[in-house]
Image 1 (spheres, rainbow, N blue to C red):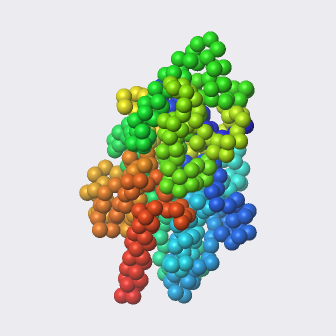
Image 2 (cartoon, rainbow, N blue to C red):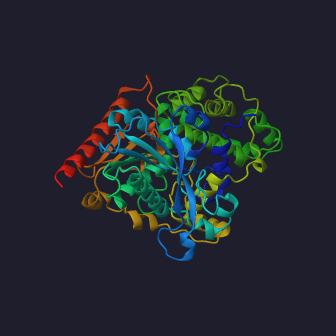
Length: 507
């Protein structure tokens, strides 16, 4: 059986009711923590000197002074000092602001920091987000930490940013490196945190590289159709026939599933294991492949979520367009899904067993965040959508969150706390030293900053780029445009650090 897609499909199966698609076509959470590390396992990484693991005693609540607030937990961070020039030389410190998952996974998939560290003589630090990985409050007991809204209430972006500020400040003091400039890095949700960290803690970090950071993907700022519009364009740009086959497949699946013996026909057509099948589960399985392939449509082979060839969207469309058999839509869709789920060709069947999919803690944490402040409208589609027409309704989200957690979301808190409206006018007045990278093949780019805001808040946009492709380890096969993007980022970061040193000299 093929289980490589387990976590990504789990995201779909558990969050269908969050996103209001008519038959389960939902938009996933950020893929950053979805499956497994591309480079090395955690133990191998440590043994090979990629980083060492440390823990910091972190306060539970940074913003209140009641006795509960003073509880602490152990926050994990990873550190690499191989290339650091040292405190005496005021050498820089590069910090990754951790996403919604195990920090080792992010460290192993952020090669840009490791590859630029020798040039900058930088110390590398990767900080794990509270409630994820091993950074779990309430004695490290996951069951207690995730037990109810009273404990989960300490999981928020503002608390996470305060964690990072506290840890960085303490680390610099312990290293006698109080004058070393800090640059923060992040991709996806971590990229949002990096940008917000620079805005909220400019005295801690001199700049931020925010890759694929959809800081504008909130109510009142972006159309619910924006995400699926990019997915649609990704496939349609490769082949009109590919687009039409995918778009027309959903009704055929539903119609077939509703007929006597239809589910068995679908089972055989898509090689689904004997234990479970439904039209909704099958559609979610196919949607997972399509959406994550669009996000990770990298120009080189990858193993970021699942093993994929270079330009996997193109490969999917080629599989659809070049398959014989006339109008056999199911055979074509199966061939496309195999690009994502079965690159090795070794899978004999695919498991859609809902009962085997218990709630993972990483997912549970993000589900909480999606029910409180991360209200990102990504479930709508117009008539041209590759998933068909559908609507996104805040009411559906609110109803779900009330049922699960007994709380009502705060859909406008993020833009109240961090801004977003009239960003071109507002951000230039109080922000500086932020790079926003977005690849237009990435659906999350629809909520990204795509234009320069000032001389120091720079948008780097790559027409062929996918989800935080700039942060990936480099490859000999990288196209010239990607090499140029990374060089731009290095040059800009160099200018920030140089300016910091000049300012330090005139004090």
